[in-house]
View 1 (cartoon, rainbow, N blue to C red):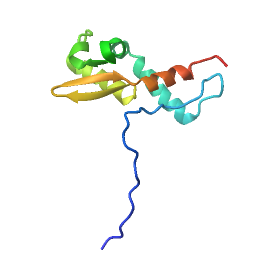
View 2: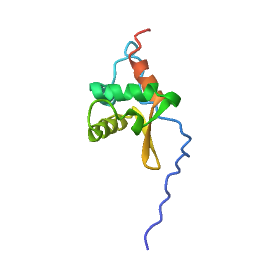
View 3: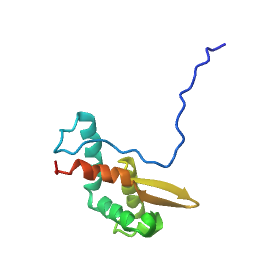
Length: 122
């Protein structure tokens, strides 16, 4: 018979989003781990199509957008899906499937944290 182990207790998902890190650059330099994480987010936004998709989601009525509403950005649907996945993998947007459509929402706490890192006011 195996030795039973206690499993860790996880807090219930309250819908709160995780803030990625860090103090403003003017206060202290970034560590290696934070630099990697933030660079991935900025890299995701560094592509013009992804930046446009991110902008369309952020400015969409209600703060979320169906992929059917943002797919017309001058590239094919598979390419749109690829770019949305990159934004999601970077933690910049969240997604939720409703029936046959996927709805995207900007992760506001992540965007606020990115803005906070770039805040140069002491």
